[in-house]
Amino acid sequence: MIGVFDSGLGGLTTLKSFLKELPDYDYVYLGDNARAPYGGKTHDVIYGHVCEALRFLFLQNCELVVLACNSASAEALKKIQQEFVPNNFPDKKVLGVIVPVAEGVEEFVTRKKMDANNIRVGVIGTRATIESKVFEKELAKRSFSGEILTRACPLLVPLVEENWINRPETKTILKKYLWPLKVNNINILVLACTHYPILYNEIKHAIGRKVFVLNPPDIVARKLRSYLERHQEIAKKLSKNKKRLFFTTDNIESFSRFISNFLYLKNPQVKKVKLA
Ligand code: DGL
Image (cartoon, rainbow, N blue to C red; front, top):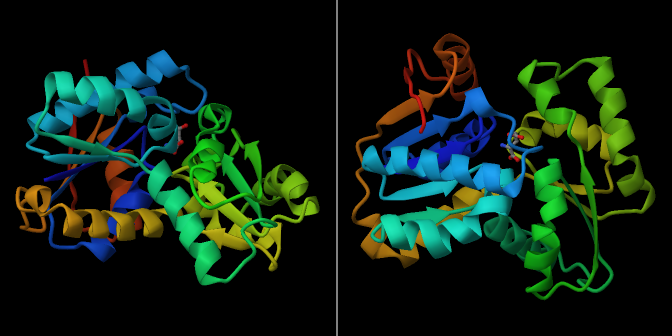
């Protein structure tokens, strides 16, 4: 099984891309809806929650877990890979979304033959992701010497959760958030939060036609495929019966409804779980 973890329902954007790119595998999705949002929480709190989620997913026979949540990847992944997994589940693997997206940005710049020294990349995400400066660090490790402009957009997650996608208020807030990036002439915009791809069209409209808006779930799915091709020892352990299981720490009804609509799945198998 491949585990996909998110603080709530936003990670379904990542799962959707996985189901397109790698449809045969079995997937277990866990959304910690009861404790979401993670984006305003501290490092220690996020780390603790992620450890609990991973224990649960490993008990569900996940050999590999992807932290779809940017805030969790930014704040917890390093320590998870260096301490939690080797000390508790040495045969299991945990991957995040920041490194694949940073690689995706680099590849995009190369593919489009853009000048990597003069490029301006905008990154929007939660406070946790933006304040961790992970994107600056990961892009700096690569052949990227352009400028990185970041902006925390804490109001966007609740707007998506409330399904205020097409509301004028959302358009106004997006315009305000994106304005400093727009006037600084960014070339690429990275949506570093699971929920933002749901606002893809609205964000594209607000930032303007000159800016390439990257969709991280598709990048992460392509990167997962290439990871599994390179790591046959892990790929071999993953079952392929097209099973999809869903767990939430909060209300099953609204979660199931969202899954059915968003993933076009009839009667998804959803269970409630208490993490500890
Ligand atoms: N999943 C989170 C992320 O990608 C957004 C929602 C939250 O703040 O928990 O950063």
